[in-house]
Each structure stands twice: as structure tokens, then as C-alpha cells.
Image (cartoon, rainbow, N blue to C red; front, side, top):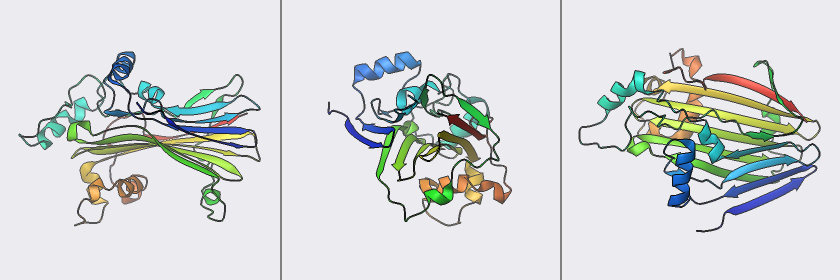
Length: 271
């Protein structure tokens, strides 16, 4: 099995590391499934991850598949409301290894927001109206990107019934580092779901800010918000993701379930 690909970058008092790996061996997969109590996604990149470490305070924030999958529910949250809808949407000849009546969350939905290690720093909630991610600064194209990586943690085609994936991107600029972790789910003919975790640190201060936000929309509600007569648009992830974030302006009832990831949470951690 190939060795993981590693990258590292150091700026000021921060050590930044990323690692990309292939899927684990069958014994490793079986061991992880036994540990988690659920079957793991088809493509689980067990040794992949992103890590930032403040060498002054010892604060470390990392993102990895194992911890993310710990957040997958052992109960099937879609079963009650959507099992019949899902089943009726499948053609008689369409067999699937995924069944909506399975006792675990077969969509692998997670509200994982990273794994924090620190002896003294703790995340503190702040009002959701407080700006924590400076979009204007992050959008400034005059600022060079000193380091960038894009790491996939897991993905699965849900038995050919959709797509789910968890991905982490990190970039470092001269003034700050920024992490975006995105969970995205498409269950064909049923729903879309997304959960974003944005983490930001400006080198001029001693605070790390985190914003977690979740959205969900039914298949038909999404179709109403997209340009008509556009082939394959429902499988165009960037278009769907951008639309999910703005669907409220269409005055549609977008939420399909009582998924715990819906809404927004903002936190800060003083180093």
C-alpha cells in the first residue's frame, strides 16, 4: 500500500500539516467499522487529514475521518419521514446495497467541527450575529496564497442512490490561515444537505474563530430554485451548494427533517 503523501508549512508560531492517503486495507476497514459500530463509507481515507498547531500555546486543531465518522448517528434519522418516499423513487429493477430502513444513518451525515487539543484554550460560543470570518480579506486577490491543500476524508455513492462526501481545504496567506471543511449529501429524488465548518486565525491576534452552519432542502424545493430546462444541474455540486446557502430568499420551505446540523453556531478560542 502506498505511503501517505505529506505536506507541511511553517509560518510564525504555526505548524501546518496535511496528509493524503489511499483507502485502508480490508482488515483496517473491518477494525474501524467494529470500533465505530457502523459500516464505513466505500472510500474512507483513514490516514488523511489536516492539522494546525500553535507551538507557543500548544493549541492543536485537526480534521480526520475517524473522528468525523464518530459523529454519524447510530439511528436512521431519515427512516421515519422519508423511507417510503425514497423507496417509491427507485425503479423496480434498481437494486441497492443501501436500504432506508437500516438502523444507522446510511447518509453518513456528521456535524464534526474538528478535533481540538489544548490544555488551557476552550471554545466559547458567541452570538451568531457576530462576524467571525472576514470574507473581504479572504477574497483579496492581491494577497498571495503561501500554502494550499485540498484533502478528502471520505465519500460514498450510497449504493448508486446519491453521493456523500467530507472534504477539507486549507490555505495560508501572509496575514492568516483559513480552513473550510464541507460535508455534502445528495440523496436522489429526496434531499440535499450541507454542513460547513469555517475556521480562521489572523496572525495579528490570539483568537481562533469558528463558524459552523448547516442547510437542507428537499429535491423538489431545490428544483424550484434552479434554472429550468438545465440538464444535469441537480448533479452539479457547486451550483447546488451555492443555492442551498441562499434558498431562504426564495421563501420556500426548505428543511426536510429535524437534522441536528441545521442552523448556525459561532465560537471563538482564545490562545
